[in-house]
Image 1 (cartoon, helix red, strand yellow):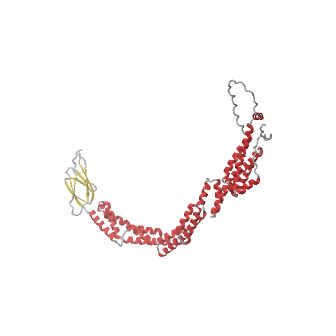
Image 2: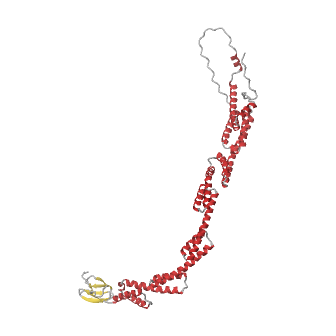
Length: 517
């Protein structure tokens, strides 16, 4: 009997499909009932995704098989038994015929290759969405998986065109999910921010999970994740600050609020608490400063009152009561300063410190220019200051009188000093010293001039002395210049500084022209 031949595939399909064992519904249901509910759904989804590629592989293997199997005649020849023939004479050995080259497997048709490529692309999209789409689009993602399964079934039955359409529909569903993902992420981040603004930490966790699943490395996602991580500590710090504030421990409360603000600068409650605490401290500091300033003003401590009131106005600019108090401080301070200037001027007059008295009177006149007593005091002090300055200058060095012009000025100064009333100790002492210097400067003292009887001698500002060998003249103290001249000889000059004291020996000058020219 010849061997049975395999059944030929239908002529219309072009692709041969291997039969697959049918699994009754009751058997499948029994297997599903044996598994736990949660595992059953996941196992079913996994089996669907794995079985489809397996069936596809079997279909392609069947196709290759029918394309490469031997023809029917060859199969019949192989099945029939060989006929018994008589032995032939032994012939010369012949080399075996060369075996034909192996036939290359027939590639799948273009439609099947295109479907395979599209399925690979869709599987990559499923892998991309698997990490986050079930969190925010579970129904749409499940619908896309079911669409993909229908496309796989159509492929196995050889319905190429419907399979291609089903794959494109699946691709459209997946692309729509991918394009929606950024908007979903941003909406989730908005929910996180709103939840944190209302201190609802639990409401922030789920949308943060969605955002992290979509774009874990995004800057905004990481920043909000950091806020969520530190938010319990921020709330604890705010509560601690409020507790410190209730018992009046303001520095500790400020430190807690500032630390909370550092951890989460975007949480408004921490900044609001810190601002409220600052305002509260400012009000308390203002009240304390104002109270101290008014107390200092009442006690007459104007300097401290000014400092306290200025500090109060720095905390609350424009406060009416503080401004009035500060104006009163300034008014009383000006009055006190004026009185102090007048008193200082009078004291300087008593000490005969006329330059100081004049400065005090001028400062007082700057505050009250119309006060006659101040103008009189200033005029008196100015006159006495000038007199004091000149007398002191001549009294300090008697040689300043050793000239004709200073003698006249000194005599006038002494006459003016004599008319001053009352005479103070300083003026009297200056007058005595200057009068003594004037008496010395007005005297004439002997000077001996020696020559050679050939040189003509002249004392400048005194007169010509003539030609002589020795001559005595009288001169007032000072600096005197002598000149000696002689025809045919170089002139000679001598300078005599005459500062004698009563009882000193006469000064001596020698002039002789001895150098021929």
